[in-house]
Every structure is written in C-alpha cells, then in structure tokens.
Image (cartoon, rainbow, N blue to C red; front, side, top):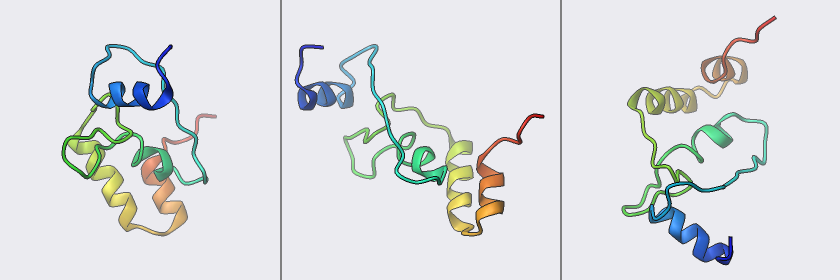
Length: 86
C-alpha cells in the first residue's frame, strides 16, 4: 500500500475498499478484548470504529452483552468460547 497509515485507515473506515489487510492485537487474555472491540460498531454515528467490515448480528451482540454482565471468569469464558475438542 502506498497510502500512509492514517489515510489508509480512513479509507477503510469510509468503506472505500472492497478488500483490505488489517490487524488487531489483544492486550489481555479476556475474549472480550477481541469480541467487543473488533467486531462491534463504534458508539458514535458515522464511524465503523474497529469493525471495518461493518458486520453486525443481534444474536452475537446479545451474547457479548450478556457475558459483560457476568464478571465471574469461568462462566463468562464458557459463554464466549466454544468447548475444547479432545
């Protein structure tokens, strides 16, 4: 990409691209670090926040919101993470 980072990010947020390379690094071990920040729309109007694809799903939003209300680690993780395969 020849765009400098800020211009590139602005183009992504404006929905001006059909395909893009973008990444996210979590800063803690909580699944919410990815599930809420990266896949939910920004709270302010006119911005996609980190949800560049503008993906939305009411069932997903409910799952993430319900998990936010439960501060107990194990039950919260059980809601958010699929069971481990053996």
